[in-house]
Image 1 (tube, one colour):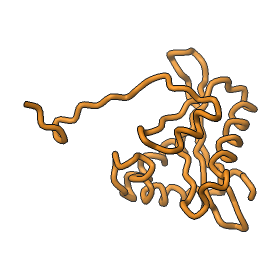
Image 2 (cartoon, helix red, strand yellow):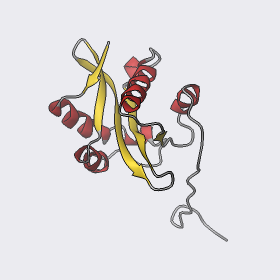
Image 3 (tube, rainbow, N blue to C red):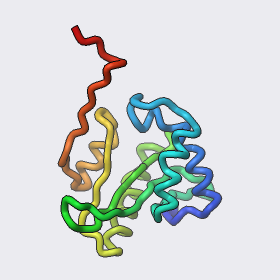
Length: 151
């Protein structure tokens, strides 16, 4: 297994694949939709975010999208882990952990001292994030008038 930066063609492939894994990644919050996946991550890539891939004999087994942005709350650049995905066949072999560690190391080498990610409630990857030292700092709450009947 080798973790490396994705090529342009691999990035295009991952952007296309992102629409096929949206439902799983969001724990059912959003449905799979090719356009939505592409539209969600393409602007991030255009703004400098990039994928690291786990390459096993020229087969991509998983990826992580990392970037950074100015955080006005802390007045610092914050590293962002925007998407982590490992294909089901390759799970439970430590690939997600290795991708996370490589992304963290990469962001630290750029002088970034704080890294954030967003994870949907119920996502089993949350346990990995906690093991790596991430802690909860906010909760997103939603009121959806179309899904809930108020009496």
